[in-house]
Image 1: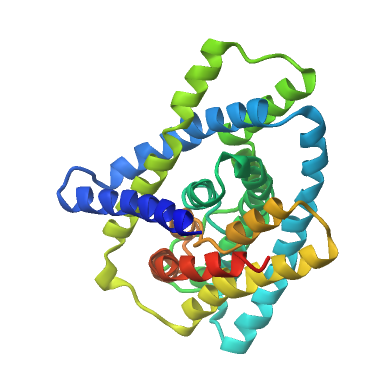
Image 2: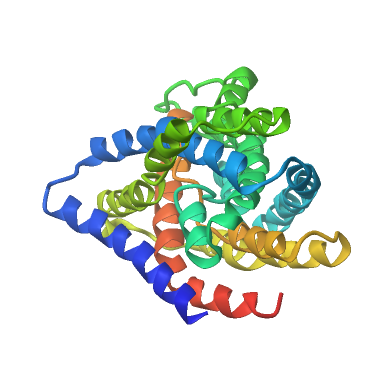
Length: 320
């Protein structure tokens, strides 16, 4: 466990490097966009491919894919829990959709993947991907739809712009992104039983290894340009923090007492369910004319709070 703490420290050290280099004007907000594209369209697809084809046999993969029922059920339950928490806290109607989406969906790649690798090693990656499939599908379909609904409240104000309409097809395109494509090609390659050529394997490994450092640079850059002093805490943000760090992982613990899956999968799902919110939420809030300040402040607070939450999560892992 001590080794896991040191590994996580190294992960967050990279985040602080991204923050510091932004402060020194090496990086700007456009740099985060470029790094995001590199991770999602290049590094991550290759990491998905090489992990699936080299870390698992066909029989092992077929056995583990059934575990996707756990994150799917957990997100459905978390979503309805978010409705109850929102009502209890009196969350404004103009924030309900954004609140529920942030409460339910986690940052499974930019933070989730590096943290899981740091704690469990590369053996955790397929389980990370299974949670990623459920999380990404929920976020880019129902989650984005709920964020778009918030704009109806703002559209009622005379000075508000006409809100962007939500397209289900656009959401599905986000689900079928390059990372998912790399995962799918890896599955097909594995099921067919073709051996990955050495040159391709080496290339995919080198490119895939960019995923963790670039992801943490992105988080550091994002936190810097959010402006820590401008973040405003309110009861709705506290509700999201409860959802991300307490309720969602607790749901995983309860579900896996009834649905039996491998121990490592349980632990990975537990960690994935307790990640900060998706980086994309403030961007989508701006696109659909929802509450951008609320989304931005929540992103900042969940990322910064995670520094304190990680040791608690690692302690709880010993009991799972």
